[in-house]
Image (cartoon, rainbow, N blue to C red; front, top):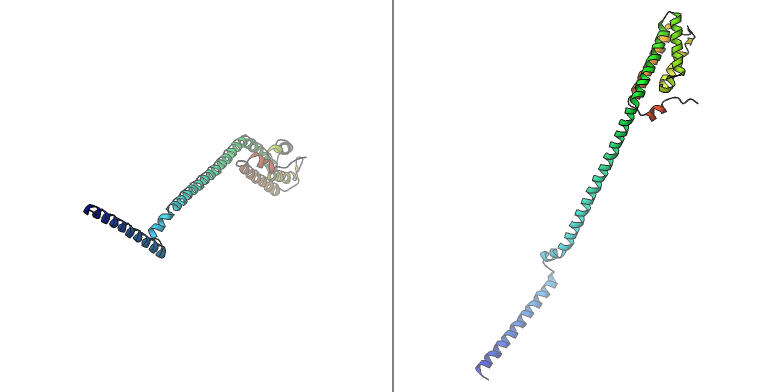
Length: 204
């Protein structure tokens, strides 16, 4: 065997021994890893994809919740605004009705005041006629239940041009009528026609 062949064979054997040594080291490392478990950082690395996915899902869910909450708030505000607009339209509709109610109440209360306080028979008779004309006519359109009851109570003191009550009694009834009218006007000023109609007597 030549010196070159001898060196080549030794080199080959050395390489094979080195390869065998590395394999043994690798086996020892794997065996040790099996015995002791993987290092914590390697375990954490395994969960990175799952954690990333959970974060993405949580972010999507939070965004969805925010969107749904915003939509609910918008719907609630739109409903409230629609209700406010409807109430404003109804109050605008009631303005002429309120003016008409105020005028009829004023005329009826003026007639009641004359009936209660004048000494002139003709003046009392005309005032009583005005009172009953309003009661059986225009008052039906605008009076609420409280005013109707006060008108009836006052009317019970009248017998044509004669009074069936004392001056104090009929004046008290006139004042009560005025208070009922005042309350009725205050209610009409902030109500809808539907609510107004519900507070009136329904004649059959």
